[in-house]
Amino acid sequence: TISDNHLSGFGSNFAYGIYPYQVDGAVISLNHVSDCYYGVYAYYLSSTSAATQSSEISNNMFDAGYYGLSVLYGDSVGVYHNTARGGYAGVRDYYNGTSVNFRNNIFVGGTYALYNYNTNAFGDYNLYHSTGTYLGYSYVSSPYTLTYIDSLGQLQALDSTMHMSSVEGDPIFAGATDLHVFGPLANDAGDNTVGITVDIEGDTRPMSGSTVVDMGADEYDITGNDAAVTMLVSPTNGICGEDSILVEIEIANYGQDTISSLLVGGTVHGKSLSTNLT
Image 1: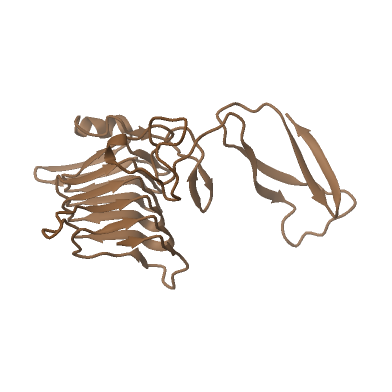
Image 2 (image 1 turned 90 degrees about the vertical axis):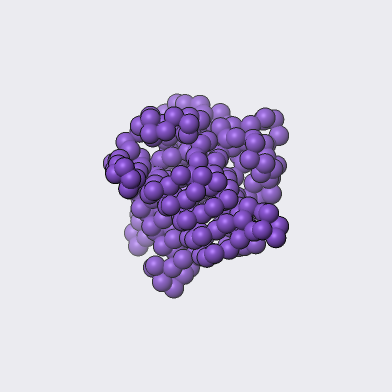
């Protein structure tokens, strides 16, 4: 069991956050991993004959420079309720067997959301988002088939038994380094049957007032009005203030409702300032 760890600040740009190799009955859960090359590199995970226990990767947040979550040559592995972002791909599904199951995850990648290579794994009820040209990459050696997946519809067309309940789009993270989700796509969109009853922070799944679990590591709810200051654009560090100086900020809307106006306030040297924005 690898659980309840916060791993970051690695000394190498090519570091592995978590690297289990040939482990039967592995449980990797409730971890926050960032600032590495691979968030988790799960290599030859399987079940154990002694306990007949499948391996499980669940309720983790992985934020990595290359692959957020990698599962290679897996057998009997449940990959549930993870939020994984990778500079190259959110998830790599590589030479996995039919008993590897990806459900209720959020996968975000800079080139691909998902990278599939000669895999027979099952996937559904996942959120996919790519900031690159393509949503995903799929390679099959026999018969040779290489597909650059440009949409969820094309992913579903590759195999009509999978991804029918998955979604595509920006999950809307809380911040540049915070993988908690504010957007509506993952909310109440998961599969209750995977049996994960709490989230990464121990909150109950599904959340009180809801009957369906959320995708990703964090169980959350969305509100109608929810605005926040996300950045001080100007003045920048090193700029000295004068009697009159322009202050520019960036504001995000994390709620469901359109915001047409709001009151923004602040304090400068003990003096309160406010303005109405429309």
